[in-house]
Length: 216
Image 1 (cartoon, rainbow, N blue to C red):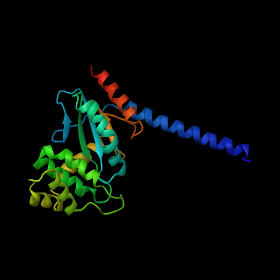
Image 2: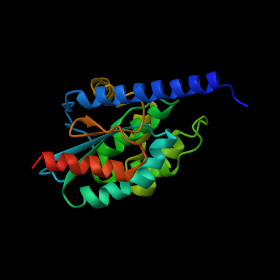
Image 3: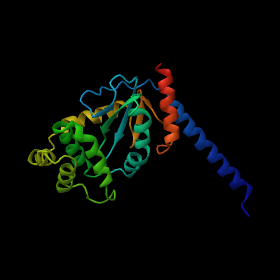
Image 4: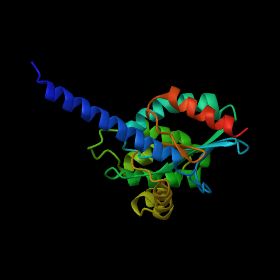
């Protein structure tokens, strides 16, 4: 039998946690919209779209892979392919050597912009365990050749090994700091952080539809 005092204490802890979560959500919702400079960032969708979605991700992040494979296809079908929104991906490499994948993706984007999104998808599809050292130059080069057979392999290898795009990634990290991003995947809709369940497409869809209504 559980003493009444313990039950009361557990109930109080639960209430305080809920209040803390609500305060945090209210704080995020009341922040002014982040003004992202997305010049030179990989972007899908119509340039005429009134709603811009920004995702911060890490190629070694398991949740990012899940988001890419479950949420993003629905988002693309409903909102990007229909011209309602445009979508940009921002690197936030913080897990192990994931910066190698970010460098490779930046190089592919510069060589073959149309190959970026298939390459982006291929890296996530090839994702190993978070603690493993699966991000290697041979893997990244092989994936690039699969999605774009005429990619300049020597240039890609050089970019990976020399971190040729560290300045671009540093700029991405400045955007991360500007938006106060604390984890991945983090999604912003017209500069407002989506604070719902990260893997709930229904919640994200409602958030996007609200932004579309506000933009009319």
